[in-house]
Length: 268
Image (cartoon, rainbow, N blue to C red; front, side, top):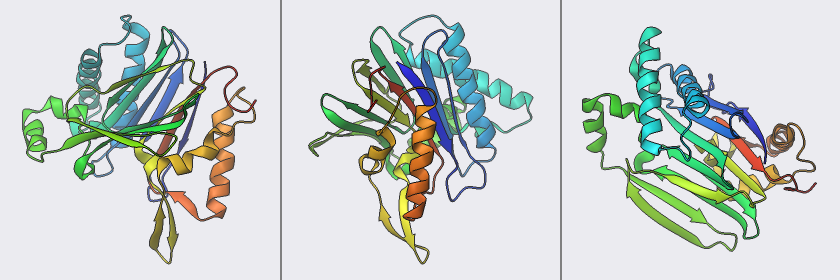
C-alpha cells in the first residue's frame, strides 16, 4: 500500500500542536499526535510522543503490537525526555494514533480521540473515537496518580461512532482507559486516519459559526485522487483546502491526515 500524509494548522491556532510522521521501514506506518491546546508546550510534547512511537515501531519487533506495552513505553520515555528538556510533564497531554500494515491488515491503535475513514466495497465508512466533555484520556495521566484520579472524577466515557455508507449509525461506549484497536483489511481501497481536526470544519458569518460539518461530508473530496503516485494526499488536500477557503470553509483545529492506499486505489 502507498502511504502519504498531510498537516495544516487550525485557523484558530498560532502554533500547530499536531505532529504526523510516516515511514515504510520496517513496515508501512503512520503516527499522529495531537497536543492539548489548554496545556503549555504540547506542540513539543506531541512531537516527543510521535517520534518515540516511531522508535518503538522501528526497534520493538513484536507484531502485532501490544497496545498497552507500547503506550507505557512511549509515555515513560517521553516523561524522561521532557524532564531533560526542562519541561513540565503536562506538555505530554497529547493523543496518539499509530497505524501500520501487518499481515494483510492495517491496525490502528487510538490513545485518545481521532478518526478512521475507509472507502471500499462497502462504500464510505467513518469511525470516530471521541470522549464526553471533549476530554480525551491522555497517556500522560498514567504518569501521576493524582492526575489520573482527577480525570476519573470527571466520569468520562469513550464512544466509537461508526457511520456507514447508507447513513446507518452505530455507537459503542467503552471505559475511557480501555484499548481501542481497529483492524481493516488491506483489500480496502483507501484508509485514512486523522486527528480530531477533521471534526472542526465550519463556516462563519460575521464571527458566528453558521455550519459545523460532519467528517463524512467534508472528507469526500479529499479521496478523489486523480493519481496515487508520489505525494498524492498532499496534492489533493492542498488543492481542496484552497477550494474550501473560497467557500469560507475552514478547520479551526489543527488537522493531520494520513493515508494508506492500494496500488489501484482511488480514481487512477
